[in-house]
Image 1 (cartoon, one colour):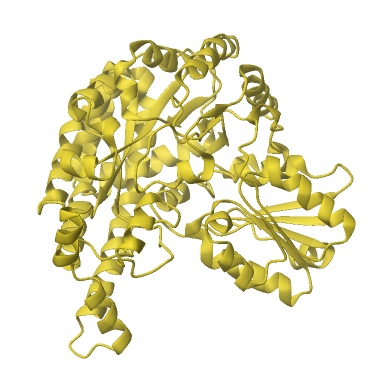
Image 2 (cartoon, one colour):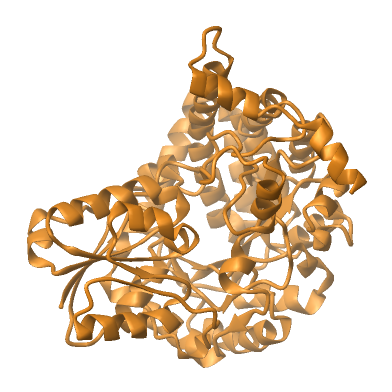
Length: 534
């Protein structure tokens, strides 16, 4: 079998970092870990070609060569995903699809013409797919309610990647999360009992990357690295000596829940293991909203104190914030903006709430007849796909204003500096070389933030202060400023997209579909009152 593995185009979003990547001469933030892990599960006698379409497009010769096209995708990639299925069908190729998007929306893949749906987790569903191929089956859907033992997961085919194109390479330690946040689909996809790989597995993956010459960021893409606290600590205790022996060749990033702040031992182990950046879903400083979406873990301690504690320990915080929860009080956007300023968090991934299929939120909104679109649009320039509890225009304007102010260049530089000055300066000693990529980004920042913008004075004195007072944080500081370039540009895109949608809905002579959509997005106080009484 000749299989062409394709990763669809990722539209511009918070996670694309497109402007920063362009400045550094890179093509993409991360490679598709799921797809290159699938590649490792395919039979050894299969011929494989791989193309990450965010790095390079496949050639027409690749299309002519292949018997089978294998696609994986997330929801945000839906357009290119469907276009690729259509092209494959037009060329007479068999199509197999998998990943989070087809797993949650299999009907979309079927409607587009996909022959084989390899859903849920590949360790359980790829073997029956391969058996079906061997039998000559023309189509099939392969699902499993069983959650696989990830200690049997092979090392991903990192050798298929053009490593020079990426900001970070991804690995995975665990799947699943023990919490029950109403809007999150992770517990539906991977369950609430976190399953972990063994330390030996993880070190083998790190060694494979090391031998390939990778020396930059490694993103441990667990949705909650500390979901299984015991196993995470066991892994960290073995990772620390490996990192020390290899002179800290990687800069580690991961995602974790805010209750990390209450575990001093875990914090120390993560820092000593080389973790420098932590993404956590804070969502909102409004406790009522957190309780309403069952994010109870963020209500058990002071959010501000927890953030400051983690920052002082040496962890740069990235965080997710959401606007549009039920019964959200007016001014939530300003409260989120104030929280971001007070904590100094540089990169705040701020979004309007979207209801993903098969989440508890989606189920509830569907039962209340409040969904306006079945398919969520997971990017910052899209209005919510449900009827909120206050006027949608109020929420969107709040969001636009807060988003715009959060990513004003001068406030961004100020809070980034405060954040890094609060951090412990400890970093493991490393012999990682400074490459042309880093130098290209640095000189671009010197020109943009140090010369062209009104930030010029602050840029230079902050840079000198970090270099003198926190020299081991200088690399991370420069990268954080580089990320800012993406957000400074992207806020214009978000503002234009959302204002365009509001204008269409508010048009004096709207089309019937637009008018119906606007009316559908008005709040439903009577329904909600009845729900509260019930």
